[in-house]
Length: 149
Image 1 (cartoon, rainbow, N blue to C red):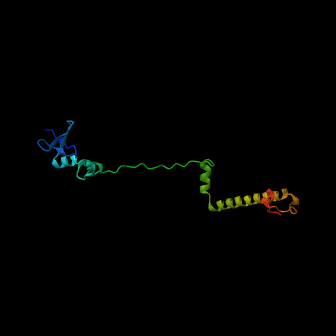
Image 2 (cartoon, rainbow, N blue to C red):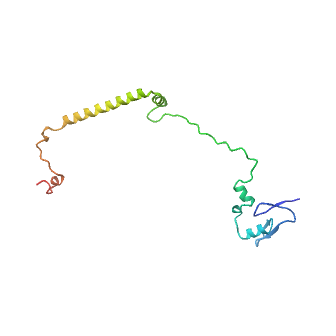
């Protein structure tokens, strides 16, 4: 016994059941009944009609064999060094105690302050001494405008 499939809904069509529709280009369509034939002729999409096999397959309805969930692969974290530091130095900094970290931070701050102070003193030493008796001239006056007259 040959069992066909409905071309629109996907249901089984047993012998002597259903309807066969032949289009103008001689293509035949087998339907389970007049309801599916009518919906086919109305150009309804079987994927949007809830009772069709195509809809059920698309929306994963009635699949009882596949009860076990798919296993998802977990990401494995790998620690690597970055451009400025290798992994050993990063781990050493991470495992350092808070007191040690605070002391290193304080030392870095004092070093930066002393460097800044030295830079400022060098700047003052390089400044010309006759800067006090030079009259101040605005930018426009320097360009020839009437700002400084």
